Length: 460
Image (cartoon, rainbow, N blue to C red; front, side, top):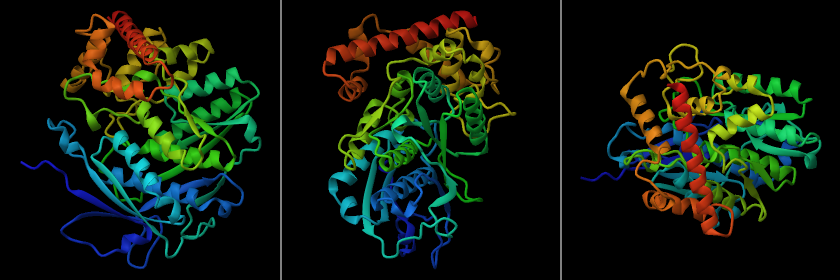
């Protein structure tokens, strides 16, 4: 039985008018109208430099490429989430993308770097890229129908005094903002956010409004749009490629202001995301901020700038450690405004959290571990009072098993159980001594286990 998925050919921009081969699976994407093809996606980047036409061509190419990859990821269904055979989740893509700086993008090392990062991050089988020089470069002047940039203008007036940070509106990135602004009282932040949907945008804007008042308007908020046009619903909601899009924007801003780094705030347990059950691997386990994903993205961006770095200050923290940051800075009241839920659809009622996904479950245990449950958000389903379905029950069971370090009485047991996963972590974690890195990893998961078990007792 052949379980190999067919390759999806993705034709982008002016190449979307290429003749179709009915025997091959194809997808066409364009944010501007063509003679025989109407635009089917919206890409709206805020201006982050006054003369947007002076942007280096390869930077504009980068933004387009990241947007096309993100849209293709959401357009192609992986199959059933509960599929026993994980192969059904792994897709193969062949991208055909027009570019301005064809000499740069035609470098095999550059395209290989994108492929490696995307394949690991998404868990897909293959990402291949064929770049071709634009025949007719789209006009990027604002207000033009082919514009890549909208009218909103976010300028960084004191670039040396401003750091760039990814901001989702979740607990981790919010804690990062709060800790940074309290630690560096004369510094400012440029927060990069994706307008995923109206609910997420409202959450982000509400939090930004609070932070501006609280911290003397030391924040620049950079919003961008990337989605299908109306009446074209996405088929895949895991959004594993979103980190590439986020990072491309942040890198483009840093490049314009001659900055050599940006911040990614995510706790280490979520980033590493060890499988909690035997059949959870590949695309089922999100790796968007995994140490290897971060390292592969950094390698790619160093083809643009040799010294560029992606900083992950919370890589050795648990979710409970993140909650403690709010307590340390007397910011408990803002906890309820953050959104951690990974369920993007079909949430009953008006609650922002489903209460059933792994992110919601991890959050509930963390707030109880830090005795901050009175400040937490509302959940559509409250597993403390009633477990709504067998899938939620299984997630709870798996979380508690991992926390109890089931079958692992020592660090050696831990290493042997997760040998393959640990290899990817240790090889891509900063530091020179593998033994020290192993000790830190083991201690991180021990702290995680202690916090979850303490929370479970308090919940009981």
